[in-house]
Image (tube, rainbow, N blue to C red; front, side, top):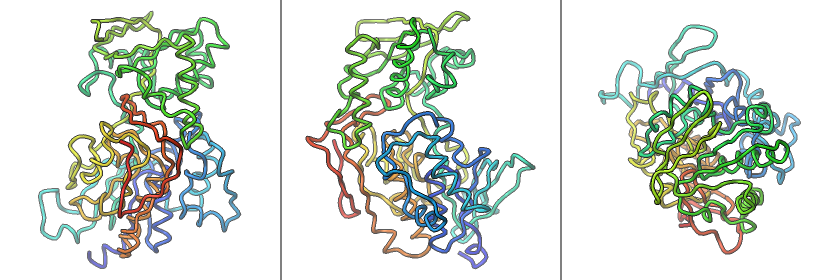
Length: 444
């Protein structure tokens, strides 16, 4: 890379937990980060699900470099064993971190394309020495181009939910139902700001992951307070045992409790569970939504007032069309990472540790990190993203030894469910596992 290019910043797309951690690691390595956030504030996507409580305690949610940056300012770390909501994560950690990073974080900056300055993806000569071009639409002004020595995409997947239909496509009538308001946004605030929208109505939750469990249990709480609130739950899996997870065997107690409470609500009849339920189409009217499904016993219909989607998310790769990417054909993760996290085989929170080498693409200096790096796999944990960006920052600074010394301490999950209902056996007893780059572990 030319001297002029090495003087440019490292552009980080997204000011969520992993994006801000990236900036902290880059600063610690003497590199200049520039974090571009589409929302009006840092952690804008986290705020969208801010009412939801995480099942991982604070000790897994604070990046080490961010901590080292914050503590000299008098910042106090929350209780490491308490469980934050999304709003608490933003208020107590992400907003102070973004404020400390100051001008390194630009909000109202939507990245719409990434390329190389003066060349498209077909040109090879001098490519590695050519700065990146990042096109930005600014909320307070016209679009402009930002040049960078490297680009790290930590934009997440929140804005790209999976469709409800089979074959990875929206079911007939799905888009119309969403436009009519019969299909809500993911993770609505059922017992808070959206309470009146759900009270006294028949609600169907679709999905088999933790997002579904959270929405279902909020509906259970609402049903206790508002008679007439009915709850149905549709999953594609044959039975729900894998969805409930490990209960008291889960190292993350809150995650285990989630499955236990869900099982009790189903067994008591508070939740009407529909298994082997594959959505075929929707018919929406002013008075309700009819969900047409295929089941082993034949076609079935259920008519509800509202449907809450909880089928996971997928990455938006459109802004990267001029870059040379190597993606796993199944999950759309970096091609070396894909087999390690494919939810058809691996659905635990513990995966082989991976850093810069595994995340690299044929486009030198470009990386996808955080939730977006997992593509369509729904098993990502923040601690995984923090180790990803530590390794990448070390590599960009020329410290190959530190970049390759990848270590990851994660709880054995116990609950291994995915939004598509995949599962694997829980461990016989909870354990804390430390993974290194010389070996791996999986639960399947």
